[in-house]
Length: 122
Image (cartoon, rainbow, N blue to C red):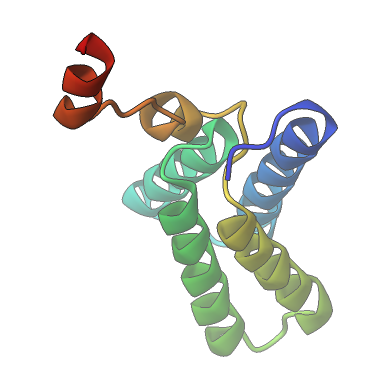
């Protein structure tokens, strides 16, 4: 779940790509103003994805937001949005990688049971 090396760097690039695509697709270019709370929420979600914070949950949220946007919008080019949804779903399934906050918080740990301690002492 937390690959290092080239795979870990690839997951960083994938996280950045998902966050950038989310913000570019959702935030209108020269259209009506997006409410402040919506912009703040999308910004926080983008930062969470970039940093690899709760990556599976953040990716699911990204997929749901983009799906809702796709179903709501009338003059939207569907191919980039569907592609973005698939990439976000892939990120959620692959995980955050070793270079993420998730890896720092939930990374590999050595669990030593009390029975292991008593056996090594004999």
